[in-house]
Image (cartoon, rainbow over all chains, first blue to last red; front, side, top):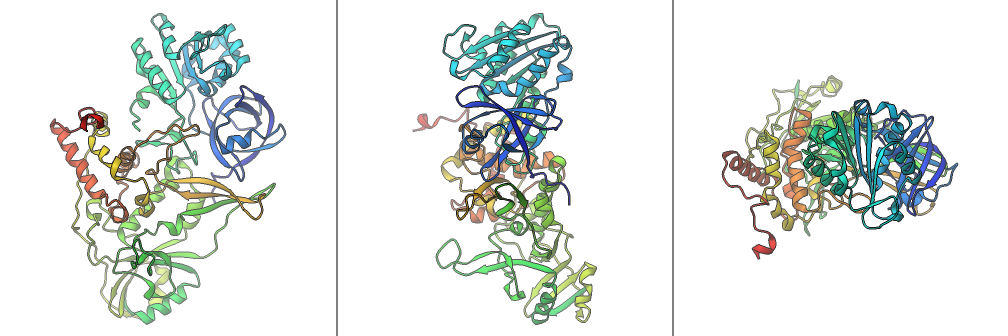
Length: 263
Length: 357
């Protein structure tokens, strides 16, 4: 009998870091080899299962940043360090980090969309010489919803950062949607660069259009899709768009492909 | 080799087969139909050849024999989980050409897509042998010929019900001995070569055309017509989508199971994510997705064949009488218009609902 791809495995929670009132980061023990941008099918037996992207990784651990929005995530929030969480994966493709190296990189992320880009941002934070420059625009709804405060502070020291809140005015943060700040990126001065956009569906759509308006060519843009999934391995059908399965060919897509994915 | 077997003798042969096989066929469930006083015909295990309903079309497909509507994947207790099991018996399914061809589509999704095999499907699928039921003639809603699924050679036995006798072609050597004492005859199954219903599959050859198809106004007509019940998918031999669902047993809250439950891309919540965002919000958008999946994008992905096999069950089962063959033909006409540069009604061109009032 072949390996059961639906079989989840128990993993120990090493640490739980509250990011906001309803977003926590769970550090979980695993020896799995994970690439930046991949996701796990995370579950609690008797409650349910959902895809969660990896927000950071290290020697024998990954971090999963989870918003408390439903039955499963409510239950995950009751777990304590030392408890077991069930996972299978990692699944999906990843951001083409090797292609980003040696070039300028622009990362535009909104809300929990910061989570999937955080792992490679941390990589380039640790290895700043591997990239010519990194511009990071992060947008959050309001002060209460700012994620990864410590990382944002660190990123400021090595990256060109624009942090923005939709409405609130607080120190260190601009006001307005991320799309309003894209024109500040000096695309004209870059000889070679890539742009990563991750966030809610609508935000990615308009941020990509804004980038194109600022002269970015389609093939330089990368996005990551979030979809409902019940399997993560091309069987359940939920994440299918046209002939493409987000769990198999995604979640990371080049814009030249992403723009043709019609729901 | 082919044989003529009496119904009584065929029953005896079935009894022998039942030692090793579970035998499934379309069976009549009296007064269980959609309307009062109507019968339901769906697949179930049979005990006698007389249980087989061969002269009516089954309302449901045989897919649920190996891809059950609901299926336990794991059982959980407090600190362990156990994979569900199936018994040792092999499986024989009385099936028609369209359905046998439909299983190939299910095989593609469950065994090939993404490169990983689904063991829950595989462990039942590899037990299956087919008994081809010859279609004497096509039913009104069938369009298997248009979809190229009217013929198959993927069967172990083929049968023709002929009064008190059954003609049987035995292709699989495993079963030859069972028929050793029967009267040999000339028989090979015939296949229908034309249907009353025909469909034209639109040829979609560019992204530009696909985008225009997405904006066709025809999809909006399903917004008021389709009630998103998913009955079409439930009866479709090739629909394979599922949800997973964890349940806790009411008798003991510390014990439960993870189930796989068939679902449908026509359901309103099919693409709804945590937080409430949906990608296909209207019935028309979902109808467009399902139509293109069945007659376009499955073939783009897997190259060989379209997903739909033209069994026509979806339109027979639709409570709102939406005809899938008409939908395909309607789309074909629209695509032809688009290709000729004729004005086809698209969402942009059509008056909005408010303006139309």
